[in-house]
Image (cartoon, rainbow, N blue to C red):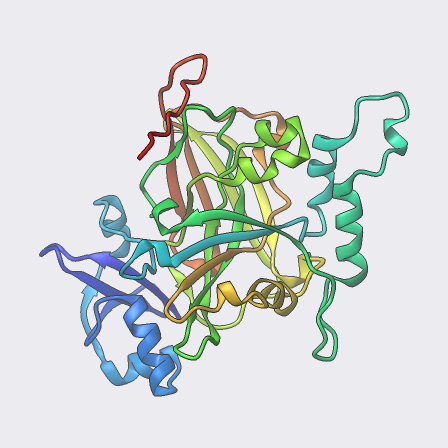
Length: 334
């Protein structure tokens, strides 16, 4: 089952569901956030509750996408209560690109073991939960709150001080926290964990800076289990033509960490178990255009697709104009 949110032609928000190509409005609810909390409080699964509520009018989702009516698939009433976070070095092929960024430029560089490779090795050796016991914790990063979340079709804006604006095709878990602080997973969605790889390459300690960028996810949420093997495609479209294209893989068959272990090491923190909060937690990737020395340009369109997740996630890139050198941000006194 796939669920999403759209703006209807009359301006109202609606929840949409589909199991195949035919999509329908869900009756009795107007947001996925309300539907999720309703399911938690009633003890019903999403599919059960949608069955009880019933289906309304048919929806042409591709047309809604073309018309700019696709919304983020979930958003709480206050965007500050949505958290965008992620993990890195989680996929079996993810170490080489990161390691290349951080090997020191010296004669014996081939013998240098970077922190990235050390972290990757930790995941290979102990990244899976076993018999209910947590494995090693992954790399973790914060991207921002709901104000940084961008729906499919809307631009990913690279700030004026950025050195780069590059895509990262990922799968994200979508979660809501119940009234008693228990995390509930709604499902999974495509995500573009948009980052500044040039800034990160300067020094690994700039990773946190490089991640403070917008991100996009959706347009649809896959309700149910995450497929073990996910095969998708990441594209950059320039002037209406595919400029760069590469397959990407995800799912636990392609990861050094298990899903339950990644979830544990995020939600073990009390601050991430506040009732009513929404979490979009991105699970990493092994595929970047940056690794192929691609520099995305203003107006390029990122397109991420994978069959189980419905419509592709498309976002144009925009570079916010700025002054050179960087203009100082002035903090005023009270």
